[in-house]
Picture: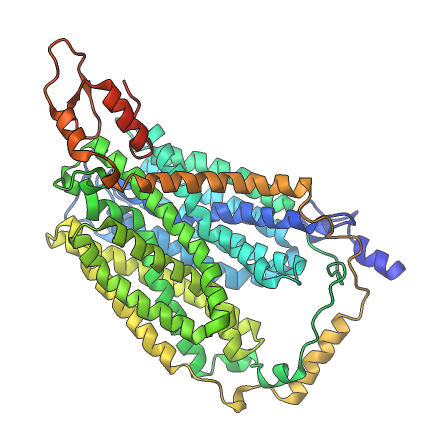
Length: 604
């Protein structure tokens, strides 16, 4: 009894507020309170996927209505210029830094997290992510790109890495009986962060923009404050189970020695195999293509379809008025949120499918289907098919998320239980993909614009490049073969590891009255805090995207009414979608009701 008591209470009375000892769960704690804490952090840092909504407004941070372009601007001079507006390619490096630092910090500080516990890691993550966004706000105010790189990219990227890995190990400890569900809960919030953040950012920019500001730095400040509150709530909501804890009535499955003996590769040998580097290439190329699209989702939709998003296909992007640009920006934010939703769903769908068809076959599907969709995207844009274009990129992003979800299982199929090899490949791949994908998309776009290519066509060549990257991944996946016997651990090495495992598990074990309660009232309230906002943004994103389906509107009839000369005694009002005079308030109210999410317009 004394041993059990020491296991449960050791450290309760000592240690600082952030110390690991302070977050050991006490009897009566409900483990279902931990997933909402993890989601609170992941839904905030997941806004990294939605930062593309800021790119176009930031290219006009000085000119406000029109970008102040400098033909001789280089990347080095863009870091310090105060007289030229930034290019999208210059801003896109922030997105690159996000994922380079995410992968690097996760690899560097993963061991530190296990020592200090998830609360301290979550606290540092909140300070870095939100503090980095505040520094980026100062960079926008002073028009210093290097401050944005340092704040959002470097410091924020470190916060991303710590916030990304802190829930994973914690949830797996709490749900050893539901490991698949635990990892799914850990990663779905990160994939869905843009679903909430992108429409929120668009709404805030519309509120704060004025004749002298595009509203970005104010949006950064507000979002940093909101995110800090939620992330702190998540960090202080973390608890960890005491040593030897297991769910009530759960018995760990007996591991088969044959699986360990024949399928375990030591870390010192994993990097020496060609399979390691082939899988590294498979994962890197798959993620690079997807991450490049996510980073430019909002500008891409706006520039390709422009006026057709409002039922005015004759208007190009450069011909749109300020009100029309605001309208299509809202639609593009909904598009970004929809991609985030498919990013989440793909992580569950493709991971489940891989259990049936195998991981290698799943990646065959990723590459073959991805090549077809990327190659057909320019065709869909050329014929003006918004439905096919949006559907294609939703599928692509589902495969991007599915690639993340199948990574651990695919590497485990080859290297067995070599978790170090799996985490090393994952972190390196994410860091490299964070460089390749955004750089390819951003700089090809800038080169196409400089060459005089219409904005609606600047992404065509990029899509073919991304399809080519997937073709290389397809070849690498085909070359992955099972390891030869020489790479597996010997029986003596396996026996040594088993002895250490048995020694670690020799202490008292049981539920200790912890983790019970299920989804009780307290747990449901915690879930509601993170769930209601998510569901609300799904509805908003869907309503924004429904405005794209203009077949449900009598577009030509509305345009004829709005362009008709007003009666002599009528009060003259302006319809914001085209600047035309409008006098039929009933028709205007009906139109506003249908399109309210797209234009945020109030009937006069």
